Structures are given as C-alpha cells and as structure tokens.
Length: 166
Image (cartoon, rainbow, N blue to C red):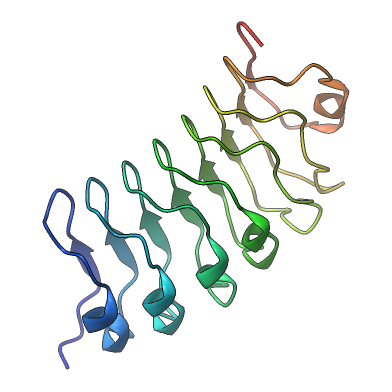
C-alpha cells in the first residue's frame, strides 16, 4: 500500500471510505462536498491530523472516537446532530461546526489545546464547559441560540470573540 500522507477527495462522487482503511500513514483528508455519510472506516487512520467534512450529509462523529490524533476538524454545513465523540478528540486545536443543526457540544474540559471554536449559524443553545487551562483565542458564535456567555469569562487567552445576533 502506498504511503499517502495527504488525500483531497473534495467534490468527488466517492460514496464509500472503505477503500481508505489501509492508508495508515494518511494525515490529511478532505471529504468536503461529497455524499459521504459513514465515517466508520476512518477509525483505522491512526495518523489522521486534519479532517475536513464540510458540505457532507454526516450526522454523527461517533466513528471518530479512536481518532486521538485529529487536531483540525471542520464539519461546517453538515447535518451534524451528534458530537459526543468530540470528548474522545483531546488533541483538537481547531473545531468548525458552523451551519449545523447541532444544539449542544459535549464537555470540553479535556481539550486544553483547543484554540479555535467556530459555531456560527448553528443551533447551539449553550456553551460547553471548557478546560481550566485552555488556549482558546478565537470563539465565533454569530447567529446561534446561546443566551448565556458567562463561560467566556474563563477563556483567558481569548483574542477574538464574535456573538452577533445571538
């Protein structure tokens, strides 16, 4: 099997990730603008660092529970409804869930490396609990349903905070 590190399948007609399960050296995968729904084969990609799922019909991140190496996850413009698997991704530095029907995020107290959280135009009702020693510098919550922004006061590294029309 070739030692492919980066794979961009954006905009392709790929329907199954099963053939990718043996690409164990893959660190970057862009599946944006595809019809992929099942992320199950990704659990075998133990080196995966960057995963882009924008504009796909995915509804859950559950198959990613063993993907401890993912630092960059973008699932914007998806049908994402369940994100409990994020608890199992403590290496995340960037999370984009903009334009999703997601109403809540799990507890992020183990995500001390998280720097960017973008949730614009999502259906989030509240902020998650953040790590005490966090590195969040950018928080975008424009057009959400969040009414209590008190947890933001715990983000000592925060440089950019947006919450227009929330």
